[in-house]
Length: 551
Image (tube, rainbow, N blue to C red; front, top):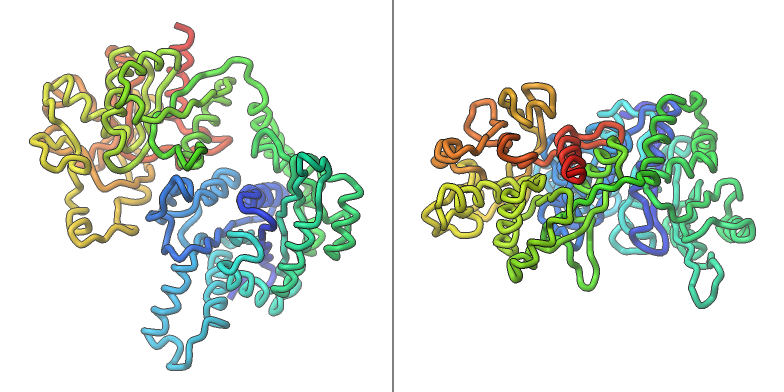
């Protein structure tokens, strides 16, 4: 049973998707945390998928992996970064996960043989999960994001769960709606009608918002605020103007400019501490870096999960982008990131020369064969031209293959994922994964979550971390083939990070004598980069890029 004084804030979206619910949850969590409250956050995804691991990144965005191995929506990464905490699988749910548990309980006779119904049993399972997350975190406030947009069929059961919680505990359950107010270019006037309809749709679910976050290209004026107040049945002071900003890290600052934490504390009936000035000033200083930085550092991101129709979806590598920002800001530099499709370097190797204008190159994670030869061409070019290179997961495997081909002379060196018939599989499927692949067990079956690694003395990795033992988050099925480790090391390739038993290669690099920064990780360091605590490997990479720029 949850503590009586635990408060629950549900954040819902109106008018359009992508309106900023996740960042709103993160920002609300941050400003309440700075008021002395213990806050946790929950993401509810309306998809039937059990988790985000089997979703296409060009459609859904990045898969964020938690320390316990749960594959989740990218918003979970924003929650962790803004709140500077580690969440667990109880903080993430999907429709599929909820239904799966209800069916398991029915099969186990946990319903005592009674008829199991969509309502109330599915919403009650949602309520149970929300309360457990609050208990697990010992939270004063649980902020819950309900995915999708009000009026959609998919999130009706989650809204019903929220309504049931409100009816059962009206003094502890509250609602924030984030809604979009368009300004049609040919009209030239901000329109409130779509948001009015969104609030009415929410009312039809038995819910009245306590706070309305009015998203738009520009600030909300008093006339529009009066309209929303009248037709949405809300006090004007509880309608928060949220115009577009240059950086998501400005959003908490804007919320506090509108005194949102005061209003939330008042609505929840809580006596909150004054804002922690030291923490708030640290955040303000960090946010200012996104606007500063006359000096830039140019990074080429070479991947394949960019294109979605005629658009570029950088969300596929969201955590990598943010990790680059944090380490760049810490060096008083502004990162300029270019999205380069690896397929282009396959079709036109002459384009490789264009990489010389960049201060550093990153090849992030990925799966499958498309664009692999282009990536290998990029790795070779970066190695031979001494351009700082950082390989993440698949990017490290590309390093191993390229080195085996061009230094060891194993011209057919490859990964089993791409060419299982190669005579030199320098990257092979992990022994623990073979049975999963044979049985087509793909969902949630990779090596996932936090694992220890031991770092070699005097290596770039060891010097960057400043410690011998690390724990980093993984998401992969393939590894460096043990049969080739000695051969690679004899030719100068360094495995500077290994699993505690020495069987798994976690970090690969070349010495600084050979290259200013040529390093890859089998894990995903980007998942542990936080705004006020940049990741040491990204920082080392950015420092190398800055030195390269000066040269």
